[in-house]
Image 1 (tube, rainbow, N blue to C red):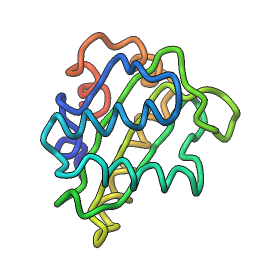
Image 2: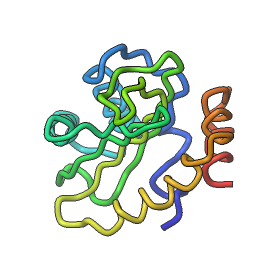
Image 3: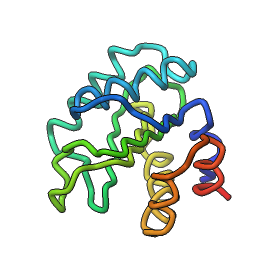
Image 4: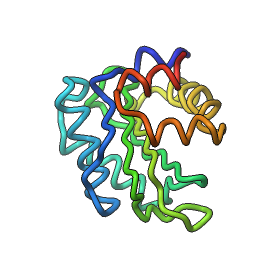
Length: 148
């Protein structure tokens, strides 16, 4: 799966304002709503929050990948947010998360979500790319770093 379709300039935020996990989740859902990618903000936020309460999606190296499933989307949608100061996301390494990749997919489809995670994990596993993402000044620069 190409990252180009689900991740667009409209779904990237270079300066998340939230200071808590719940605020970051709501801000990213609002980004997807504003871009016209979801039909029901509350249903999406509920799906993401419920999934996050079952197990944190805070990974390591400053990355969190919150995700959920709901019929409020027709296909996989994604958003990326940067919070330079970081937010406690219950990450595996105990460090704050500062790069957030949110995905929302239809209840009935698992494959695209798994494919997207495999594709996005390649650049995010590269420390140099993570550093460049944190210092990016445009959404287009973020897309270039992740997609090429």
